[in-house]
Length: 497
Image (cartoon, rainbow, N blue to C red):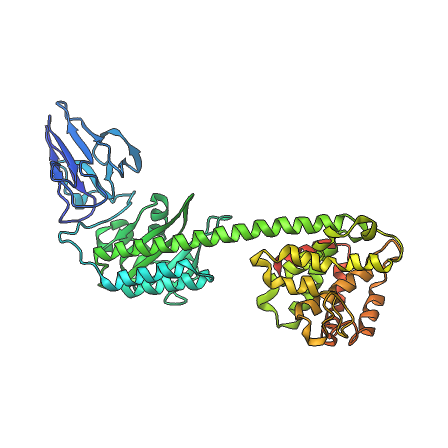
């Protein structure tokens, strides 16, 4: 009866071939007490047992290992094995065959590669530069406020230690599942994952949630035949999944071209840098989620304020749309669209503190009532001031009723002392007020509203802002009175910035 054989799926001189005859049993692990010692940190000290019974049936049992055993890609506690099966102990792969079968080199190519790791015979030296780079990245993560810049620095530091020919940090788009390069070295080397030397490597790393390393492409027939690998001349590849609390959020990829290979110990540094990148990404996502939820809550509140008076329903959205049109036309506020968007949606939120008897009054206001209505900008400013992410929007919330001639409120600012966002929003707010119906008057035609804006240039309004309005008057009118005006405004609010 022929012996059963477990042989490494790729040439690896430090991984033993395991032969068992009928009635034999061997334990596998990295501890000295194991019958077959495999020097790899992914194995437990006693990882698994392989046994051949008297009839020649080969079986494998997990001995309570940390990283498990996988047969043909499926995790198992116990399984019978037949020739051709691929079994993975931790990160090490073996193929089952019979001892008198053709050599492994003549066997079919393995179709479920998870990892190719060469065991390190000597204790790797600690790289001082690598540790300093990791510590520097850790410090930066404590106070980063620019995620793209942080990812670029992580990749630069990885490159200084691992020295790949090409590298990239990829992010998973949660909506589509597509991988998008966010930081790339050398710059411009990749525009999409389809241009990578091996998208197979990236997909395997993400699917297994484990490091995927090919120290030498010539050891892996499947990758050796990949057209992208041949075209790029790739010799060595490492890919580390970026893991968040709920699964993969991206990947770190690096490769070497020509004849040079990644030293085995440096792959561990790649994994460490990937951990930094994953932590930064997830932290940024948490901040983004928190800010988005706050913004959605506040904007819903602002819409509720608008809805108190059916005459002003939709006012905040329209003012925001008009303000963004002016900002876009000016060409000066490309980096501030989101600040202006928030200010527009929240500029009247202080009306929550104005009594309905005043807010909904159909006639003219007496002096006390006017004082109460004018207080809404101070109330709104006070409500939003404790929220750090709205700090840049506060000047427009407070100052959109200031006048160029200094006769506005609440602070009677004049001319250039008024924040430019507030001067811009004053035009948008007045245009919408004039073109909307009120209990005490009908809505003015768009042409009449435009005439009055020009008439008050240099008095109520900044002349430069009125000139901007002149250039976009037709766009204002379309956003106000076209049959699909609401859809146009909605699209504008999504697209600008």
